[in-house]
Amino acid sequence: MMSTTVTTDQFMQAIIDTLYMVGMSLFVGSLIGIPIGILLVVTRPGGVLENKILYAIINPIINIVRSLPFIILLVAIIPFTRLIVQTSIGTSAAIVPLIIYIAPYIGRLVENSLLEVNPGILEAAEAMGATPFQVIWYFLLPEAVGSLVLSLTTATIGLIGATAMAGTVGGGGVGDLAIVYGYQRFDTFVVIATVIVLIVFVQGIQSLGNTLARKIRRY
Image (cartoon, rainbow, N blue to C red; front, top):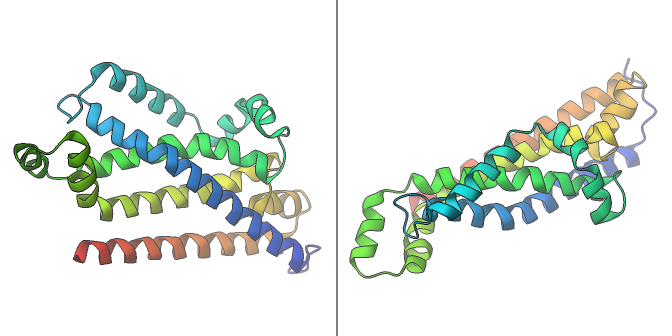
């Protein structure tokens, strides 16, 4: 039951590929998603930079992308993925749909975190003559840092699950290993090992996120 045809090198490479996909997707997705989240908050009705037209454009786009399950999004944008990276197979190809999947998700998480900030703090900042940029940079974001850390932690864990699903179409990583060797070749050891690795990843990231958020909120 515990015999396997997968070598240690193959398994380690799958872990590295997963970390690469998660890291790159989270980095680029954050660069896109965090500004989107801020825009959603400041341009909404009653925001410091209220713009109903811009909000009415961004908000439904976020909802549309988030309504698509990742596996469907992955397949639907294959032509776009080929246009960007010249292939639809492998870790580099998987990063494209991962970014498109996680950026709106991060945007919505950031929006929720910023909306938790006490409106009285923003009103006091405006009363002191702070510009919209100063309100955002010196009051809104600092007050929400702890919550933002937890939001990015949630996004990272979601990405780990998405990278595993990317393995169904040859995306690489531990998900690909589990599908090709564990499922298609009935290798029980690979399936169990993959499950253990994913659990360790998630538990480690969640614990790290909780610890950072707790320390930040103490200051």
